[in-house]
Amino acid sequence: MRSAAVPAARRLTALAGSVALVLAAAGCGGGTGSASGRVTSITALDYYTDAAEHAQWGERLTACGKSAGVTVEHQSVPGASLVPRVLRQASSRTLPDLLMLDNPDLQQVAQTGALTPLDRYGVDSGGYAAGILSAGTYQGKVYGLAPTVSTVALFYNKDMLARAGVAVPRTWDQLKTAAAELTRPGRYGMAVDANATFEGTWQFLPFLWSNGGDETRLDTPRAAQALQLWADLVESGSMSRSVLNWTQADVHDRFAAGQAAMMVNGPWRISELNKVRDLHWGVAPLPVRVPGQTLVTPLGGEVWTVPQNMSGARQRKAAQVLACLNEPGNMLRLAEQFHTVPSRSAVASRYAREVPSMAPFVRSVARARARTGRLGVRWPRAATAIHTAVQAALSGERTPREALGEAQRTATEP
Image 1 (cartoon, rainbow, N blue to C red):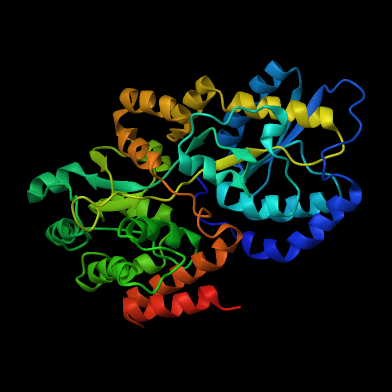
Image 2 (image 1 turned 90 degrees about the vertical axis):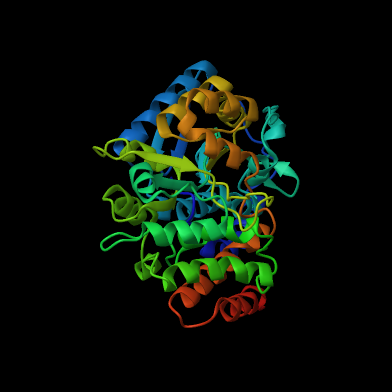
């Protein structure tokens, strides 16, 4: 799952103008070109480099290629190199026919003119929750669709909570009380990823958004309340100060080892949690500050797109494969393989009934928000400002209010 960090996004805006000019000069902007000759194969590029994950996606691409009458030549590259590679290929007019992108990257890549809108090919974009469709949309046009998506929730150790007589927390006060009760020598009550990357921002967003905070205005009392919660958990000893350096994988490892009773994490961890002997875990929606607030979590997952190239016939075949990946049956199979949530609401509801452990994620996804939904291509700067503020507040360098005030100034400076 690459839900949080998009290292290449920081470099993307500076290159967008030059890529767009190259595409326009090449005559690729209208998606025209030679459609002569029968298309028998297309290329697909993603960042699923894990051997098992690559093989599983390869099987699905092969099956969808067969239904479209083409062979899919599938290649995966490391996540950090994907967007730079896309920019180079756009400049040299060698983009793949089918391209996967982490959803926060889509708007910035679409801004370069490297992608084609999917309505051109009649791809069905109906039945998706608003946040999911927003993640694949740029300037009112849908450029990408995600077969499945993800978000975060609260994992908890059932045995630890039962022994401590602690209920699953539903509010922030309950979370602070439960975390304190569950903290013991060698064990923290709560664990999060608060590191200085987009992952740290990703984990903080549910607390910010659900309390009415907004990345367009970070220096508000509601935003400060959210950061104060995390600062209080660290200050009280209920959460390790080392969360400033932990990744989501580190958080998982502490939870799996019994060194954390609760954690914020995503469903992509379920496969590994199920392998841990004698670990009885549960999952619930993240707590909100007060009863009645609506939980809003960030939307994770990858979208598939059809890049510009010189062959309309290849684009149409790529669109057929993309549409196949987003058919309900394939959504369900992919969700079952990767512990993700089908993107069409009706399929997700069915999945929640069949796999109860995924029900909290399905409920959260229905209201999840795309990280680029408010700021579009300006999201990376705000994301950096947010995780910088989290670091400053949790380290004690600044109060939450001071840290977010500086974040607002950083995010909005010319």
